[in-house]
Image 1: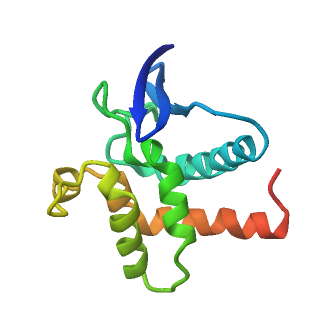
Image 2: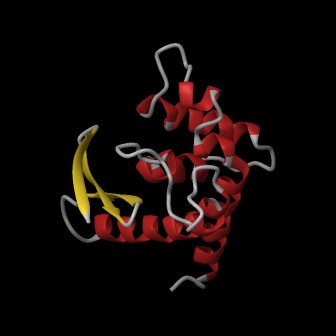
Image 3: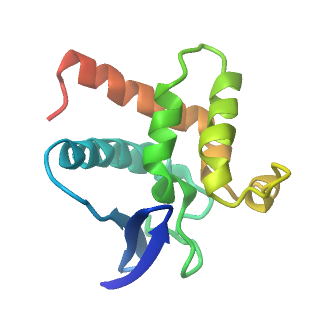
Length: 151
């Protein structure tokens, strides 16, 4: 397993690669609620990995992530912000979710000052490509949380 450190806006993270699969691991500054928040993010991560990664265009035949070395999937790299953006919207229409992601996630990713993103424009952004499935998966996890049916 290989690790690369990344500074991300006051947070630190490491890319861990194991057998071609990349995973972003966030460092924790303390314990308690921060640890529970990270455990909660892991629940979202696993649900998204099952539903989105399984049909992703960048998936290798063996199911591992096929993104180029050094590139981290936007779902993995910005998952806490994605969850926060989705949780801030309550709509049956996808448009407010698109607006929330573009306002809360894209500026800290690869979007330029004018709001353009080369990945998004080239259909190379997993969040944008699979946003309906991402929203549905996060909402499903939240429903299970509210029912107390998560591990």
